[in-house]
Length: 379
Ligand SMILES: *Cc1c(COP(=O)(O)O)cnc(C)c1O
Image (cartoon, rainbow, N blue to C red; front, top):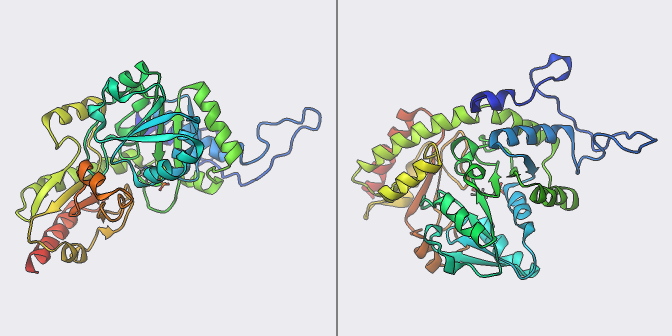
């Protein structure tokens, strides 16, 4: 079964020969009085609708297990729950802002240390200590879109007895499957591409490791940050168009990158693989496409505020992956928690803008960017 077929047909055999799965809202389920057991008991532990979503997610990922959480951060927190007192995790300096906050403000109280590495692709044996139990990877990095060699990080980490956790939000399993490359755990903010319509918050953890799966099941049951049945159902429905949406978003993004590169008003354009021929080859060896997020800087003398004001379609907003294009300024919006030095080291300038490309008609997006560039020049 190919991916577009899988997201539509991963579930089957519904009552009444319905072609869409039912939504089970029950918080509790009647048990057999004699055995006091049943397939489901209480919604937090498990419920049929969330279980169906988790089946689709595991099918998509090709994983043995999938767990749906109430947000991407709840999923990341669950993924990192495997770290114990005295242990350490390595992360890229440009890691997602919410993860940066969690690692800096929640993990220390548990005695867990987060250590930042400027670029994970330069990771060496010397970066590991006996306390290093995990490496957290985002490739492409946000918003620099630099690429990390997943196979290499897995090889290094496993040699030192550390797990590899990949935040695959920017790629989704449609474009990149870290578990197939040896990673132990994948986390995703389903709020972005998986849900795809900027209308729900959700997160996913996938793994094929049974021991880790037990820890993640415990997070659902003991901490309770699970995805509700209605949102689980809506995510099942959204996933049916994920490959289709991504194909269109990616085609739009590719065309916008080519177009922006030809404009005098644009100083730099970054896209997965744009940093070097090496990174382009690397990305092509581990992912089947560049995705649909790009970043760029306006040339000197252009008025950024005038440019953003003049844009008609992309809203000036955080988040990404929706059918509508969005644009943001990472230095003040998504990566504001980093120190200016850390941002500089990660290559996040104050002028950098990140564009998440939607499924609008390409001509409209190109025309909009052109007229906004013209408006930015007038100032
Ligand atoms: C948005 C995002 C998250 C957090 O997800 P929420 O659903 O907002 O909690 C984590 N990682 C990345 C890369 C993201 O873009």
